[in-house]
Image (tube, rainbow, N blue to C red; front, side, top):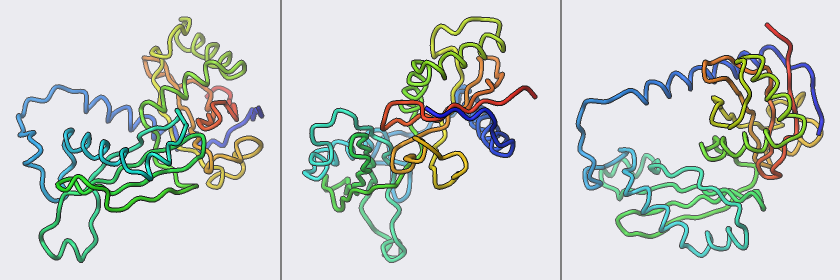
Length: 242
């Protein structure tokens, strides 16, 4: 594992801004809602977001397709990344009538392949499916939690995180749940000055930056890069105080 003691201030500011914006969005979304909206799936039309029932149906249909079964193979390390409304092309939209379709994305960490399936929901059928390399979607909440566990289990990164947490909060870090976490996708090609050594595989591998803070919002001065495909920390970025 390669450690880089200095980190670009511009990169730090950009990622810190993303962290705070997403934290604010989380607080807003968590606020109580008083309005009542219809939820039955038959009320969802056109480009409306998929209902929970539609998402479950799309996932079920996609994962039963032979290509999806082959994609998973013997691997136990796959992740459902996203299920969303399929974006239709202009010709379909011009017709004014089309079936509800969903895009389903599943990642295999052992092969570093992304499966994309287009599901016709009324027909319950997969209309298009393909696998891709070097295509990465934003990390899921489950991947964020897994990345934190990997970082805390790493001898170097874990020790630094616990020390910084103690300095920032005056408490010992016992559980990952004591941290506020934001995982951001990392590709070596986007930041070649950082994507060196084991981190050079990021992009082909699925990797994330981890922004960490205390429950009170104090940022920890560490920005580890975790390779989820390899289940290891590939860079430990630290910076000095303000």
